Structure formats: structure tokens, C-alpha cells
Image (cartoon, rainbow, N blue to C red; front, side):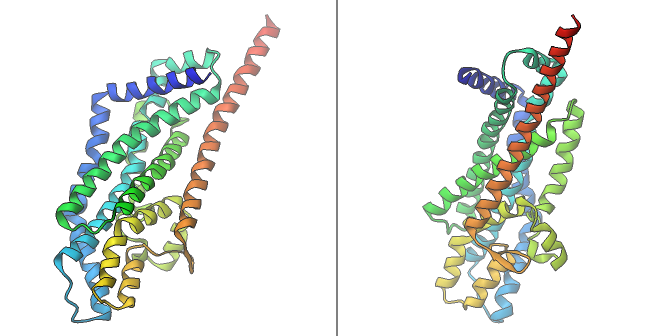
Length: 313
């Protein structure tokens, strides 16, 4: 059975890379997002950071490289928090394509367990998402190296670890959402809606701190916001440490953390980094469990139909 699962994963990965249009679209998407963020959000983020500095120290002189490091870290975390989830919907094409071509019917009537089929789709999508996610991370790190680099080796490793968790979450979410879809048009429509709306829901386009308290409280129930905060913690930690090292008051550092969602709050309670990991991992396990349950229930119905046919015959 283990060999069967491995074969399914390899087959689904090959299908994704065989479709050059889908693969290059998924690969180019992070690049397009980085250009859009750097073009349209750069000045917005820059002004927000300067306002925090000037609110405490009106005559503060902030080095251009340090400011670029802060803005770049915010841009990188926004890019990764969105692309790791939206790309998972592109990478999950196989689950719908098999229904369109009829290959799914062949899998359903085979002796392969529904759990193996489900895991074959999930793990293949996760592998595809990781490839794109790591490529997006490398692209973002190159951008930071050009504009303002304050990351340590541990920060870089933490970012890649965050990407792995976010891809697992995005794959679980896309697998559950894509399960009932039967056409590529439906998948495209869902992917468009997710691409357009997820960035707002997870606080990637605009920091959650910029919204009203009511909206912030509602958004604190979404697991994706915790993933965004994790990425911000590791992408901005080096630059924030440099702010403190240059002698700026602690109020400035704390204000920058609050503004950038490095400090994340569930209502009025500050959420620790380890708690963010727990929320994100718990949500991922819950989504994967629901996804596997759907396949198990379908397999059970298939067996009952088979027994009914045998009795009639």
C-alpha cells in the first residue's frame, strides 16, 4: 500500500509539471505579487513606519537602509502569506482534472483505499506548493539583499519553516474546498475569489492593526492571520533589533511591532509565537481531518452500493 501511495504522489506531481501553463502561472504569480507590492504598497508601508518613529521622536532621522529593511520585511511576509495559500489552489488542479477526464472513476473502482487516494492528492499538492513557495522565498530574500538585509541565518531558516507550515495549511484548505468541484471552470472561479480576497482576510495587504477593533477581533479567528504574523516576526526581527541597537526608545520598537502585526492580539490578549504555531498547526490538522473524512464517507457509500448491487443480482 505504501508503494501505491508513492506511485499516486509521483503521478500527481508529474501531471502538475506536465501542464506548462499551470506550472508557469503558479511560478510567476509570486513574482507578479512582489512587483505589485513593491510598486503600490512600498510607499504606504514606508509612511506607516515613519509615522511610528515620528510619533515618539518627532525629529527622528531613520537611515534609508534600515527603513528599506523594515519595508522589505513587511513586503516579503505579505508576499509569502498570500502566495503559499493561493498557489496551493493552482497546484491542486489534479483533484479536479481527474474528475473531468474520468481518471477519478478508475481510482474509485480500484482496490486502492480512499485514504490513500486522498493523501496522494494532498501530498502531491504540498510538494508542488513547496517548490513554488521556496522559489518565492528565495526571490524575496534576493529583494531584501538588494534593498536592506538584516536577517540572520536563523531568521532565514525560520522563514522557510514558516513557508512549509503555510503550504501545509494552504494545501489542506484548497483540498477541502476543491473536493466538491467537478470542472476546471469552477476551480478557476474559486481560485480567483481566493486570490482576490485572501490577502485582505489574512492581513497581508494591510496590517490588521490598521483596521477597527471590531474587524481586528473578527480576523483574529482566522488561522491565516496567525501565519501572516509568524512570517512578519521572522522577516522583521533583524530590522527591529537594529532599531533598538541604534538607540531608539523602546516605545518606538513596540509601536513598530504593533503596527506591523509582529505583535498579534486575540482581542486584548497578546499571542505568543508558540501559540501562533499551535493555532496554525491545529487548523491544518483539522482541515486535513475533514478532508480525509469526506473521502472515507465516500468510500463507505461506495461499498454499500456495491453490496446492494450484489444482493440484487
